[in-house]
Image 1 (cartoon, helix red, strand yellow):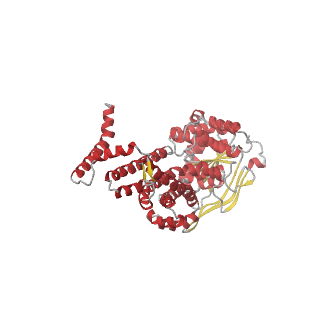
Image 2 (spheres, chains in turn brown, blue):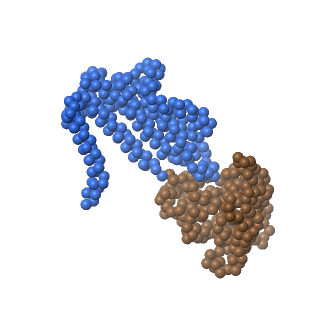
Image 3 (cartoon, each protein chain N blue to C red):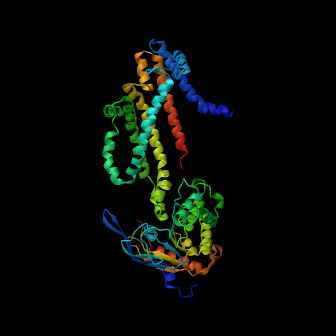
Amino acid sequence: MKSFVPTNAMKKYVQIENVQMSFATKQGAFVALKDIDLKIDRGEFITLIGHSGCGKSTLLNLVAGLLMPTDGIMLCADREIAGPGPDRGVVFQNHSLLPWLTCFDNVHLAVERVFGATESNAQLNQRTSEALALVHLTHAEHKYPHEISGGMKQRVGIARALSMQPKVLLMDEPFGALDALTRAHLQDELMKIVAATNSTVVMVTHDVDEAVLLSDRIVMMTNGPAATIGEILTVDLPKPRNRLALANDAGYHRMRGAVLEFLYQKQAKQVA
Amino acid sequence: MKFRKYFADNLLPPLLGLGLFILLWAMLAQGNETLPGPIKTWHSAVALFSDPFYQKTPNDQGIGWNILNSLGRVGVGFGLAALIGIPLGFMIGRFDFLNKMTAPIVSMLRPVSPLAWLPIGLLVFKAANPAAIWVIFISSIWPMIINTAMGVRQLPQDYLNVARVLNLSEWKVFTKILFPATLPYMLTGIRLAIGTAWLVIVAAEMLTGGVGIGFWVWDEWNNLNVEHIIIAIFTVGIIGLLLETMLIQLAKRFKY
């Protein structure tokens, strides 16, 4: 795949050009991000990594359209990002399921919004069931969020985002609140889902292993304020990846070392 | 064994409390001949409740009619307050401008005793019954406005982000997010409102007359029938307790 010359649309599926983001505070404007330039290919898995407060979530929220940049251009599939839209599915860190709806209804809400105008009820239900089957939660579809585990809730969140058939899947530290074993399990599932659906993914993380395991490219961000992209590391490990095999892989350790060096040497955070 | 533990933990304390209360009452009545004791009151209550729905004259009707009339006034006044207060609460919670606009009025009028509104009611409606309903309306509208608005304002940002990301229509945001998220707060407002309304109706009816538990208390005072006054106190208390319990049970169903 990589050897073909990609078409223009493929090469620049998500385009971020010269983006700057500042917030108004009592002490004046606070520049969170500046000079952000990033082009994301279709089907690419990008992780954003950096110390806390570096604005990686801000960048993700900009792509999601939840925030508007103070300067610069943001395009998704050649259309300007003017607000949130169903072409960009978002998975939140704290799952954000609606507690009064069952898992099925939570996903159905998204499906109905995107396909409700063109499809029959049976088709909408079919789509909802398929999305839940993708994350292996068919057995829990009629349960309420408080009746299932944290990992399952996060899977419903992923199903909800994928059910809209977004052009880009945006994930804000989706596994950050989970224990290590559940996190590993969900990472494996996510790799399978992404391979099966050929999704384009932008994911915020602060877990170096997670970044190397999942990404095609790791976008490393400098410390804020006025954070920007420091380095971009291409992870050319063959797919599908297996966490056990990678544990003894020299290439994996080299990548991991490069990210660690960036985070703890070049961008070492002073103890506050 | 299980029953004995349940009895000791949950039934014994309230029964003991009630027993002591009645004992104290009996002792007080012993030393005061104008205050009827528990047994005398009980016999009077049995006689009263054996024929609750008689109608002799407009001013002499069974206890059942008095209770139903009071409940009716509370229902109408409270219903109207809900009809206006809850949507108003939603709007005040949703739009900060409206909140700032109404805040001084609400804060100023809320501490006023609802009975102070009775003359205005009499003046406007020129009749006792609508004036009593008006007093109930005024007393129950504040908790409904305030609690509904609070519920809307406490809506977690996460849910609003979901709404934005899914691009939900205003109607869907209301029915799927805003309303269910606010419902527990709304039910608290309703519970507080019904409590106040039931508190106020007795006083309002004492002033306006007509058939109703409040008027009945005043009437029995004029007849110097103290047993009936004590029965009225218990009746009002028990009905208030039932209303409260019903609403708590309802609220439990909407806890997430």
